[in-house]
Image (tube, rainbow, N blue to C red; front, side, top):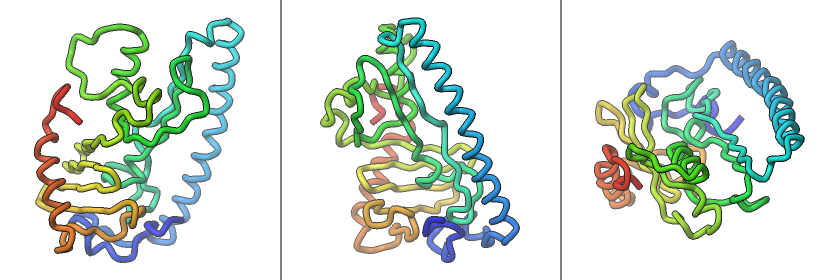
Length: 226
């Protein structure tokens, strides 16, 4: 249970969420069951990864093999009264990424913002192939070697299902929804996104700056993407 679970006050959230009632006791019980079941299912994933690594080790080519562990999205699991995904909150957009291989330093954690769109350029660089189509992402070989590479990067976030777009810049995330609703969060002060600052006069400058930046990058392609 995080502070965002079954959020009590959603008056600062978009219209669709304001119309979402609090979770019922039955729904909460179902979420608990789903969460436990998901953790149990991951035991099989652990076993499968162990078998795969073992086979590669026995084949003798571990020095040439890269392992990439990640996910396409997270689930809300009751955060902000939501059950699954599609909204651009941290529970859905923040996913694990672990890469193991000879060109990635061992036991190192990097803090730069990266995205799933970076995986294809990274794999292309490792395979030493040149893509024939523009790629929006960046190879992660540079940031893996040097924590200063991409240190000031911004990320474009999109949800086709909810027609929402966002830009993440440092600890700030600014979200625009179809219909005109907006959200602005300082993740350093409000990591669970409980209070949107989009209507706060003291934060108008950062809101407007990120809105302008989002307008620049929401239709970006290739090198023009952040």
